[in-house]
Length: 138
Image 1 (cartoon, rainbow, N blue to C red):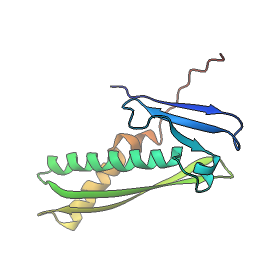
Image 2: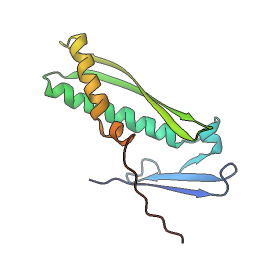
Image 3: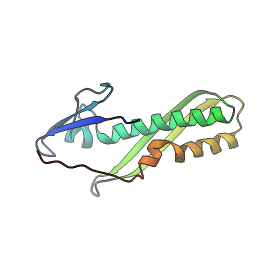
């Protein structure tokens, strides 16, 4: 399975502007810019999108793991905070905060299954993945 998204950028890094469109078109020319990334401008930014992807992926993976262990979550509520070290220009941390309601599970078993989901969800693995690039000058 493959999914895609497209980014278009025009202008300089600071004064320019861009748009993001996803295959599903849930995002369709969603604006992003220096202001949305480093200040409080209206629009989105790459780190926010990675945080959403990580929180969503982790939550779904945990649901599968819980089900495999014989439990069903009433609710899985996950927040992901992505830390961007601006001077270094790198993402340094992805922190997940999980609040879940699962009937009949012990705290120890829940912690074990949550830890398994943290390391096995595809986006967790992506954050330490091999990168590839096709670059074309047009």
